[in-house]
Length: 415
Image (cartoon, rainbow, N blue to C red):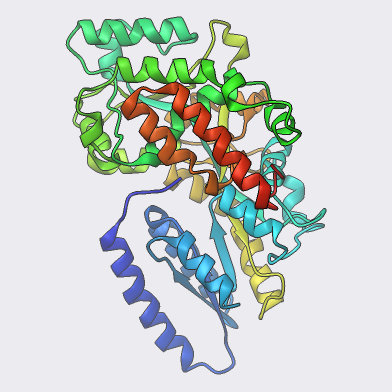
């Protein structure tokens, strides 16, 4: 998931990186590791962990490097054969593409993996990997559970919806009371993905992409229910959706001007930064009228990995193993409102804990968009669909783009 820019944090990162580099360069017998991480909002948390590691490992100095547009940066460095010593990558289609190319380290047999929840490890492997390898270690997961304002819900006697009909009722009652149920933010195409993923994962059979790869299915045949549900969201949405972006939606929600924020757990730190006093809850958007059928979409939010031929293999593994220690994962989870990946750990944030039973009951599934190569342009096509309301064109274009990519791609899901 793309995050909002945090210019101040990035600037601080660059300054700190320069300072650390200068300091480390004077110590010839110290191995310097570049720690490339993609989340600006997690800079302070990782900085604390890096300082802790450096203090206890005098022969290794880790330097955190966090840059804007991390995916483009890492692709560029791949081309230059200049991968960082240790990387965090988001568990998305880009990771799957990179892992499938055979340029990442094989962590098979790494002890840290033995404690990872099987459902989370399966999601990681489904993203893509080289042959039978395991090319990353999941540090933290997210929950694609939508955040709601508990005070507004209580004021209007509403409970988190358990069925699609209940969700529609909640929306109608909020609107009737003069409360904006949610704010769609269609300026940023990626913000359409949280509800696309939750609806598609619960309305389309799991074997869809296997059948699509065999030319036995199509978006035009299988996705009309998803299109209908998405149109329902826009019909009950805000009139200014075409002019709002991600930060606008967060601000409206944080100010109490909308009741539901259609983003997953990753958005909680940003909302709390705007309004620390907001009483938040979360729920999995239901897509049917059978609560037992609802699965929560979850992804590996942060994957630890490194290049297939690392410059400092043992030192890099030492740092990765340090980050995977339970107390350090718990620190990350606590500060970032994330979902822990290790067995036995639980989220401390009550907002995330509200949907943690989905993980305990193994009622989680991965982001559908991660099965779709970026070259298909799912996000801009979905953005255009929601702006136009033309579902026939959306589904036809998805099939056309998929066929083009499938004709030339070796993407992990092998379309």
